[in-house]
Image (tube, rainbow, N blue to C red; front, side):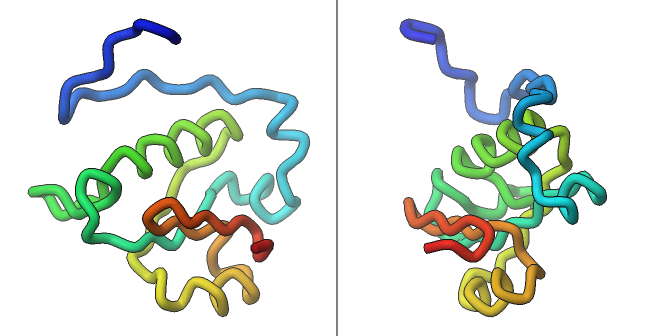
Length: 108
């Protein structure tokens, strides 16, 4: 939305509604488990970092969470980016995110 106010830091974002057209495109494994597992590289606040409760947070995580919700999935983030390539190949991770570098489903 153009001109819409951004949420304040720590404010809960509205939940996305699962989009049937996206859900149909999910690989069978993700559609069955309803979980999207993403390797992230932490330490680049406000992109991605651990908050005061030890939870993985940041604007990249907010976008990933909204995308997962639009696919009808829960988001699982793991601070394992250095193992992302083998993790993507073995299907341990569905995607990887690191400071504007995105890899999805093993594709570069």
